[in-house]
Amino acid sequence: TVKAWGSNSSGQLGLGNTTSINMPTTITSLSGVKQLATGYSHSLALMGDGTVKAWGSNSSGQLGVGDMTSRNMPTTVTGLTGVKQLVAGNSHTLALMEDGTVK
Image (tube, rainbow, N blue to C red; front, top):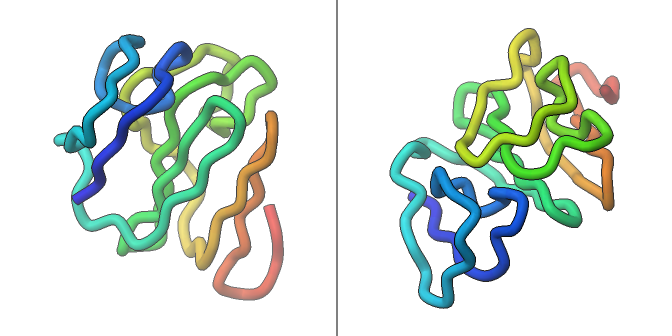
């Protein structure tokens, strides 16, 4: 399971709202997570099956969901499978693929 807390102005906690919280709260829509990555106001989860879920600010397309609309719930990044590792920066995200390439 994944727990989140703190500032949530862009929905980066993945709890379905933009209310900040000060106690660890379970993100009930996530299970089977292998790794987490966070940027300035967006978050990502690498799932056990090599897929990715993303949420939070998307003002620069950093969620990888094909638009620039922010999400306050984990959303599957379609067409991205075989991910080995994730890293996120201020307004960007990188995925290291199982074959050694980077997206």
